[in-house]
Length: 92
Image 1 (cartoon, rainbow, N blue to C red):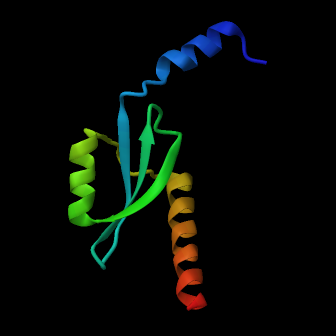
Image 2 (tube, rainbow, N blue to C red):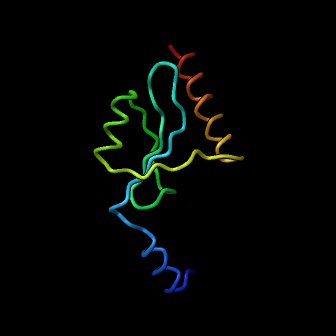
């Protein structure tokens, strides 16, 4: 169980006024796949918008742009996205 100081540090690090975006893929069909997080970049959802709507979204939310993930985690996420895309295309 975490001690009280660790819990307080974690709570202090979480800032619900900060919003983050990490671009995963800029697709050839004009869509941008990205991760969006509020308060903590590690707690994110994956979204997809047309490029112009993506830029509007980032401006409206005053996001902090995070660098792309590199290494094992980034490669894993890219492979997962590609596998999901193939499965969806194959289902139709």
